[in-house]
Image (cartoon, rainbow, N blue to C red; front, top):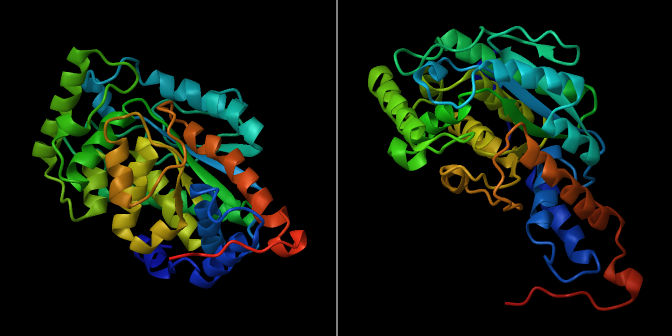
Length: 352
């Protein structure tokens, strides 16, 4: 499918399923809405899945892995060789997110969408568009064709997972330099000054932070991304990992699989996906609020509330995975808890 075909095929989340789920929550023997955002999340999942019989039986984390040419500007503490190392460990099941996903009962699906050094570990999906992006500070990071290919890669990965019976996905990533690309995208898409939305990433010094902000400023000045065109912005100052995640969010909406947003990088991808297709928002759930400066700004722009405020910024999808056990516990109440009728007590009423 082409991108415009994907977008035109996406339908709004199922309002009837969500209303039925709300009624079910009201019948559960507990004070009304006492699980707060967790109840809202189950309702939203019902709308995404198109049924009030919510299933979280099979969960996966899609981690898009890619390198970014902007590291040449000295915007990171580590070299881009780290991307391949961590991607390899994802494939072997030994990275941070893999450890957490094992506890959450989720599979980690690392995707090489643009790692500079080939990642040949079994368990890593081989979907490389190009071996890292160009340096956005001096030229567009990607061609339009490369950007579209990365987006459609994400869509295809979701299709494959849906065919395998997965009912909930989380977004993850690995790519040295991707807090720089994320900040550049936020700056353009939300019209914010780069200094306001750029953080230290994985431990930059003040001098390094200044180089990072400067690289973003130069990239925006040189490339002149169109803030009204998400693809144009993404290809000029974004990254292949983020483009792949845009596809995961669009694929979730297309194939009716709810998708958990992780931190800043995946939330920026979610924002770009919503700019391309507003109905995609109905299939997204915020997990946590990133400790990066733009973390709150992006979620506010999306109109989504995170359930976890733990000052996390590890990436890889770890924040989204942390949300999974909370959803499992909420679903246990939603699907298994006795009703007020079972207890033979009066139900709570909505009072005005």
